[in-house]
Length: 449
Ligand code: GLV
Ligand code: MN
Ligand code: MN
Image (tube, rainbow, N blue to C red):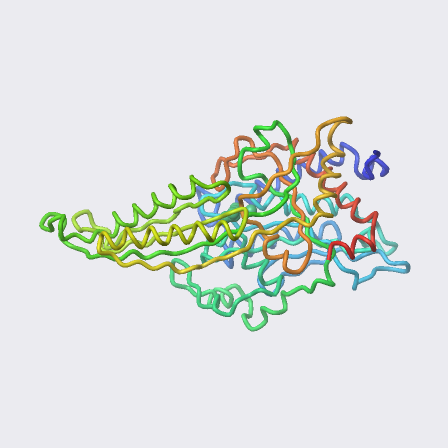
């Protein structure tokens, strides 16, 4: 089969253009890495000065290729190229959204999210068509949008996918009272960033405005590296729940308090963390992580009276994840009972597993195939253990994702890597996927919605 991309002139999408695009992506990843709250690490969280700076950089890159840009009511940065109509541009045409996120975890790598936003900009650069007035348009019957989502990680307020939830019309009123580590509420942070909480509904997009959502992202595990392959089709995104626990005992003198009367919250919480590991290790595709753990009052000579800790629980299937959660809770009940402790868990994030839309999986597969030699095996199909903005967007449109090999699988860490050659291969594959969608136009629109 001849890939659609091969029917286009090399001056538009040839290997030199693709290599150029990949170089720009890698270089811009470095530029964005310098936009950080820390001088010796990468950290860019929701509604921070760095968030605004990252958005401004991305907006400049979008405008440079003729896109109209705006920051939506939730702080997501958007660029749009309208569809080329018969006599001009069609501003009402639904949009194919390409993108990922620009926010990071603390002490982050350079590529998680970022590479997907920058690749999306390069796809638009390659496929856009010139207009008589010097402007540019999408060559398809649909508009092309690039979205840089503002809060996929949930680093600042503990609740992930805030940016994409606003776009999906799934914003929850009780989120306004969420606080960051300094006690700033989400509402206050909106004001400080120059956003109006009363207008959050304006970020919402309706299904009929969208053709679908396609995201390229580094794999955050080693599967592609083990297979020796550059790209994979993502079949689904794991479901996730996050909890903040409080384990309460009694703070007492570390020397004078006999073991028989101690109610040591840290030992109870430690047992709880080990229970999470034991129960999840015994399961297939349920993964639990205790990533935050803090003892109070936190003195060397006091038995800990309170421990606050987190749980991130993921599963390929919601029901399986929830069943494991029931078992974790029952065991923590028993641990607390034996140690005379009280515990509670506040759920701060919940997202269901999402199946990638079959049509979008197909075009991603065709895209990857176009990068492989004739007779090569079918591209890898991987289920994402990491969360992505598509989890929120699936409520309003079809979601498709492509993974890029991550040498050794390290992610959420400064050593996170992706190869420039794999980014080039990914750009070619993503361009082909978009062309495959455009080729089928109206029928495609109806099937994806
Ligand atoms: C985001 O990267 C997540 O899966 O936590
Ligand atoms: Mn991440
Ligand atoms: Mn990510």
